[in-house]
Image (cartoon, rainbow, N blue to C red; front, side, top):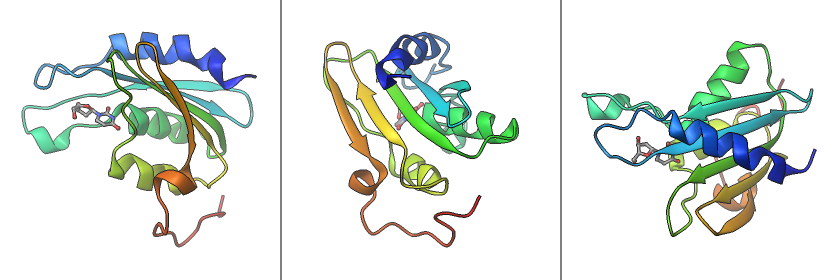
Amino acid sequence: MDIRELIPIAKKASEKAYAPYSGFKVGAALLTKSGKIYQGCNVENASYSLTNCAERTAIFSAVADGEREFSALVVFTNTDILFAPCGACRQVLSEFGNEIEILIVSKDKEKVTTIKELLPLGFSLNQNKK
Ligand code: THU
């Protein structure tokens, strides 16, 4: 599956974002090595720090469904500029390996990146542990 096929799924996921505080809606689509797709959106909270990002929503949903091996992630924001995953999401992504292909997408821009690029010298005890 081409990673770009995940873009409409990430876009649709962003429409489900619960972002009454920031108004910043993010959608994620995560492809597992087994071929399943999990979506995620950001879920905010009145106690701001409890907010969960779209990327982590998708990852946690997949892991809760028994999936731990991922091949691609698309993150979409309906913005003019590109936004890359936050530091917390980079750390959580790196827990599940360095191989995942990441595509960040805005209204009319796209950029392919990797965990190694996003999180150089990252902290990991079990990079390849399944
Ligand atoms: N957000 C994400 O969903 N993913 C990121 O990687 C960065 C930020 C969300 C969290 C919050 O709901 C809003 O964007 C503004 O920070």
